[in-house]
Amino acid sequence: MEPGKDYIDHCVETVAAIDPEEFAQRELGELIGRNVRLFGGSGASTYELGKMTTAHGLLDIAFKESDTDAEWRMKNELRDTAIVLSRSPELLEKFPYFTGLIAIEGAYISLGIVTEDASRGGLVPVRETRMSEETLGTILNGAGDEIFIDDDTLEFHTTFDAGGEERILDLAPSIFGLAASSYVHDHADFAEIHTKTNESLDKLTIWIPSKSPLALSITGE
Image (cartoon, rainbow, N blue to C red):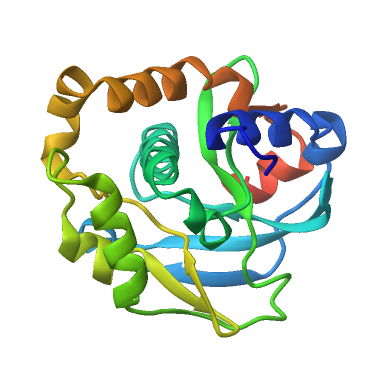
């Protein structure tokens, strides 16, 4: 990400570089992993989705299902990531390179999330882990006393080891817990990022035909 550019703008530019016609011709690859902890959850599977060209070279990307509404989850994860990075920009490399939404054109049906594949096409082992004390301290110190963070969720339910690298790949449910809704009104920077996330949704969405190979491989039809 370029200096001075915030995470939401970076994600918008990355999604804009994806050719939706070419993208729609892809099909889901191998299952990378399954997260069964969300909301006590039914599981959210992640699949390989090939490579894409970015300003920093080729990037492996993945399709992430959601055991909740995909649009709601993507917006929450993007907002929370942007808030953390606005206060602790030194943690940028630990977060996904980008995140976006895949949806059916004309029907406004969200299929799931497109994001960086930390396994690099299944070549790098990825496993859930506990957030390091250093990273946890950086995030909590960045938040300060005025913003509450659910440190149990942050420490135990967000972090993965990807080939020996600590990566923060899963911010659902929100690390701000139920307090997130009140912060939209009480904190200017939180409110600004929340609003920008919502206003950027269309630019963060890759629209594909309902009968395209990618849509059919996702829906199983």
